[in-house]
Length: 287
Ligand code: PZK
Image (cartoon, rainbow, N blue to C red; front, side, top):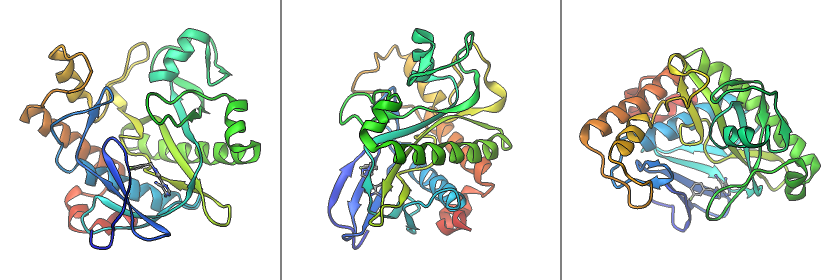
């Protein structure tokens, strides 16, 4: 990381550095969080899998909406990107009813102010994918926004633009993923605006940390679906009777190995590229 200097931010498992006035470096670590707690044990190659997947999707969706990706570094875990003015909302698209969307529907029949048909079950596919934006919480949890709430933050016109882009991105990736045996239950995008006022897709894209990936053949409406990547970790953590507060448990080798295999499998299924080829030359995902 020779020319990257100033640390400008941290996520739970990623770091952001300033390269210069116009460029940032996004570095994905091998840390893993479960039930919102970062565990003391890392999953080798997780950061490279997520960076490679995001690069793959950025390269394939720039016709839908321009994005911040400038280059992937040789380490496979660092992305150089354009520095943008970020919009103050998280853009979520849901194709299936899970997580906070399911909770909200069960309590009110609505998600982000949108009424859904009656009688839907947990994990069920929605009649149409829905756009369910949230606030960006600095600490604690993001809060759902209805249309008026989102428009108050970014304006009606920008809201229409991010909604259209988000739904188009979701449809594109979800069709691709399902043909490779993975359901993209829901996903989160972050957008920014460049110096010309053009909307630009930022952050990570269709990674297992920003999306719910489910194996096509092992989910069933009426109960929570297993996570493609984190299910071994969740099952292990639950088996300990851990209360899901900090600090989380160390993971045994078997759980680490099984989880690493799942990340690599998601990468290979979705990209069609052997992970070893990515490790040897990260540019392969951009072709
Ligand atoms: C930006 N984050 C969240 C992500 C972190 C923090 N292209 C951009 N321009 C300006 N700001 C951001 C981005 C992007 N992406 C993203 N915060 C600011 C975030 C990952 C690690 F520490």
